[in-house]
Length: 111
Image (cartoon, rainbow, N blue to C red; front, side, top):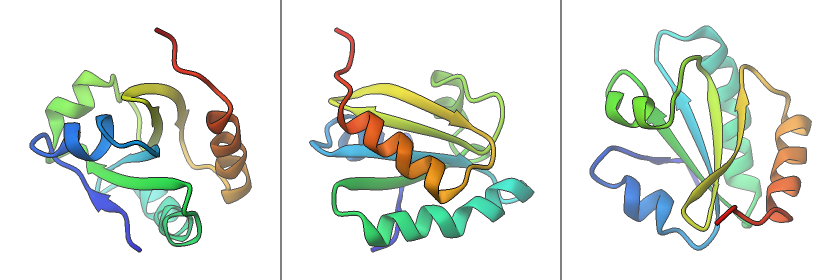
């Protein structure tokens, strides 16, 4: 499996309506830390059946970056039941991201 490329056109269906926990990687092609994080994101996508992984290029999908207040990249946003429940900004280790995934699985979105 490879991460799903998300645009403004498919964001609702791919992220907000997804029954699984969704990890969204906000990135840009010119961003060094984003390039360093990409293999980790790809590995998580391939290894975890309990997680949907999506990527959003902030240069191409500016509206989504603004909507979710992406001020620095890379930013990882975790969505559960259609709501953003957790955010991680900057380069993170695979272990750190896996810990966030476990925490998100036990979190209930605020109403």
